[in-house]
Amino acid sequence: MPLDATMRGIRLIGERTLRIVERVGATIAFLGLTLAQSATSFRRFGLVIREIFYAGVQSLIIILVSGLFVGMVLGLQGHETLQNYGSEQSVGVLVALSLVRELGPVVSALLFASRAGSAITAEIGLMKATEQLSAMEMMAVSPISRVVAPRFWGGVLSMPVLAMLFSAMGIIGGFLVSVVVIGVDDGAFWSQMQAAVDFRHDIVNGIIKSVVFGIAVSAIATFEGYEAPPTAEGVSGATTRTVVSSSLAILALDLVMTAFMLKGWN
Amino acid sequence: MTNLVEISDLNFGYNDRLVLKGINLAVPKGSLVAIMGLSGCGKTTLLRLIGGQLRAREGSVKVAGYELNHIGQRDLYALRRRLGMLFQFGALFTDLSVYDNVAFQMREHTDLPESVIRDLTLMKLNAVGLRGVQSLMPSELSGGMARRVALARATALDPELILYDEPFAGLDPISLGVIGQLIRRLNDVLGATSVLVTHDVQESLKIVDYVYFVSEGVIVAQGTPDEIRASPLPFVHQFVWGEVDGPLPFHYPAQTIQNDLGLRGG
Ligand SMILES: Nc1ncnc2c1ncn2[C@@H]1O[C@H](COP(=O)(O)OP(=O)(O)O)[C@@H](O)[C@H]1O
Ligand SMILES: [Mg+2]
Image (cartoon, rainbow over all chains, first blue to last red; front, side, top):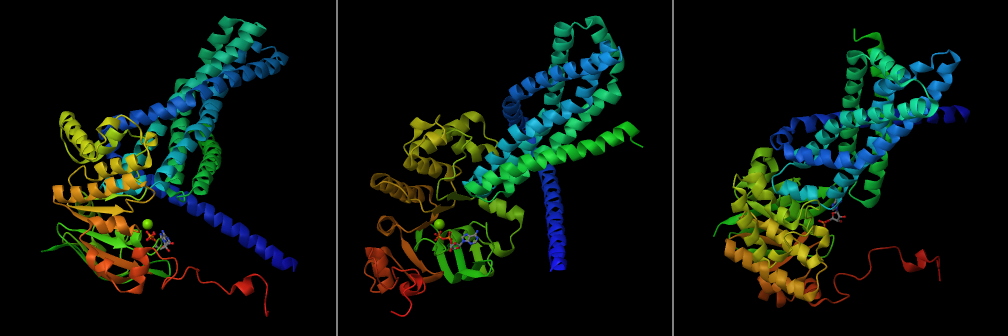
């Protein structure tokens, strides 16, 4: 009997793993299809601009506010810890590096996934459920090139901008708490930050991360919407899966990229 | 007269269950042909086969000279440009205004300047009596209005073949008559050919040239509206005159009610 239960357990783990691998593979295949049909998006860039606008507007406020709060908390915690070593003037460095390298790209991508990503999934899923995608196919217009690709590129292009805004707000938040409230010297705050933040290693790497996250979130969001069962439950399940899978993808990709970036790429 | 649509010995099923069995039908150029039957008898499936959204398992589906069983993507899209389809629930693009819905195919498939597109779009909307709602969004329309807008959109590029899926479903008697008249008029004015799938017998008998009756995936009767009205076949009689019980039983097949209610062995 216990052997039976163990076997069942192992089989279950195997099945689950296979299903996850299959899902990842299908998402990547769908991403390939989207890229192959992206010509329209660039020939008629207005379609993409429109999606950037929607995705941006949807996520902008939450990203600005969250950035401010995260920066303030970093300022508080950083000051508290650095004080013990008598180097509270370095709080600007700590805030800026944490944000630009990690928290900016990661947290803004997580917020983007739950705000804009789920909205993209729901919109495409509903278009499918109400036969709008079939109707488009019957008009000899490919839904991938007309509906999916512009949303994909809209997400990919807005992600780095949102991440940078997040970091900028965070630095302002850190400044407010440590300089204005606590009273760290503001000259030291800014000059140490400028000296410590490297353009290539910190800012460019941060942008690379957010572009990769943008690709992952947009591919997952469009795939889940396009593959959603055409019912109310189907679409609501798909939006949940978008948020869960995107979040896991963001954190896993972050680990891999961080490891490479710290080691250098070769 | 040549046939625009020709279906011979068609078998089609989803998974293991055959939905259409041994269908033979022809739609002559210029005519308006109805396919009637109860909900679930396979009408939408048949229409999707004609539109190339599904592939026949056995037999052949020919539309405008193309054999749809082994048509390539390019030819299929070329064929679809000559084809208009009205979906059961309209399937208007919910993110576009009424005007943009009707103009959609002109923008996708032609290089016409915006001023010409504007004139054509307004003419199409005028033909269905809805020039006045051009700036509304689909969510702001009543069911009957949405159906008429969908009709204007389906005919935007003056298609040779128009497919209608349940154009009368869920309409009040007045809208119903309006849509019926529009379908007949569009067919004649555009010199198009139309296939109308419906379970609304009375309304469609008024406007069509020829009728096929489908029951459980088989064509059980065919003829002109007069022949159908006078048909002695019990099934057709029941259907045309809306009788509750007849060859088509009121009860879906089930075990005996005694069994279901636990009254075994009374
Ligand atoms: N995508 C599908 N997968 C499996 N079965 C389907 C699918 N679409 C329709 N069916 C089944 O095929 C039969 C015919 O459906 P349909 O063509 O939509 O009927 P109608 O339009 O005449 O109401 C129904 O029994 C339906 O349950
Ligand atoms: Mg149907």
